Length: 375
Image (cartoon, rainbow, N blue to C red; front, side, top):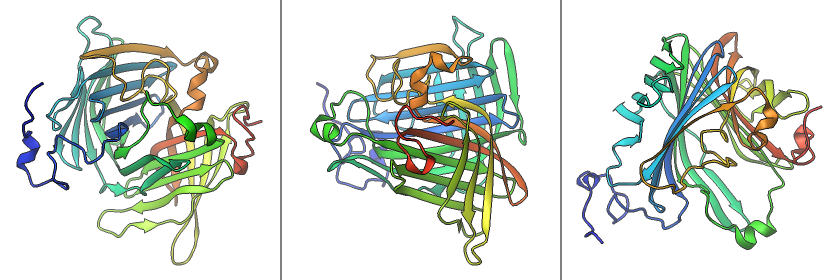
């Protein structure tokens, strides 16, 4: 066993507890620290989702990228043993380079030498608005804290290229939008039995909406989480403008239109309230294309790979999913799905992500159980 030594980050005055930056202040195996980026065009042709995460108490670092193009979802996933250098955000062919914190990032995926027509990209993601804190996220099962996350969200523009199947797609400012989320804390990763608390506190229903939208001169963030009976455990609607105070927009209420026989949204209207005069505002949402996070991206309930799972050193996997037949991937409907969307607010047109998941009973929507769908 090697001797315990300081790591490079220990040279900087960033410590919050009397421990090396190599170690966490919690021994919870579900501790995590990760990010997600969305990159999408304004016509709904392409949706690229990528992220990287570290899981210090299980010793894993992993990353993923998925590209929705037509009815094909192209995925690259990589995982490795977590090392001491937390400033190097790279796993296998996937890399995130922080050029300017909170401002500019270079996102890249190296081509596979054995398959040069597979997915590769190099994209500069640039923020157009300040980062916004999201509400502190807490979730319990019985008496146990199962999720606690600190998060912030941001929107910007993207430039660069994506290559797939012998085609190069150019990303131009004004035609592509980017959003991103950073979070850290504790959230469930595979490999742990739920025990008595899970058995005696089954999930009856879960309803989730996470919606960052970029307009030309403003950025809107809406997040809602509700239980089966509609009890709200997470709530925020905030308008961000450069050089102005953030504007809280009250208690968002969403009217969501679903594809018949499913819980797949096609459009939505999110009702907001301006402070002061209490004037109602409406965020209109038109879904352009969609990407299930349970396919390729490693989110639950994926059955081929999930974040934080130890699959060995220097593991890389590339594959493609056929999305032309939704019944071929039944688990995807029970995971959160990210939808690239065209949005309207106060006469302006913007673009963003309408992330939605609704499973089990949700009384306000009229869903009675896990097999309940829209008429």
